[in-house]
Length: 98
Image (cartoon, rainbow, N blue to C red):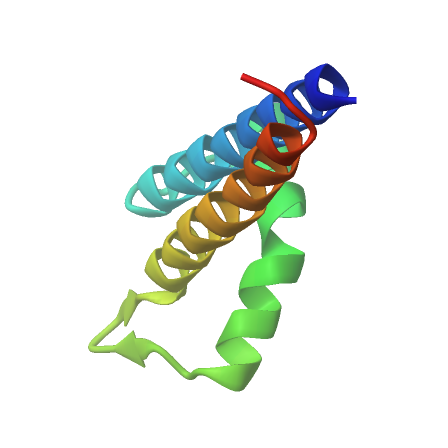
């Protein structure tokens, strides 16, 4: 059981990291004027727009033309990753894991 929980924590950790980098790529792409029909740009927008839209609705974080909602999302992802992965690793250790 401990090995399964540690494997699950590792997979969740990787998923959080992948989404973190997707949000960073989206923020970098937003600094230039990308082709909206580019498949990579479309993927970045479709992967991040639903979450960023919710953040923008709750916290209007646009000041002087700058949108700070990706920073809030990155902080939330990191805190969520630390809490969730740490909790799962702790559960695995409680079952006699390493």
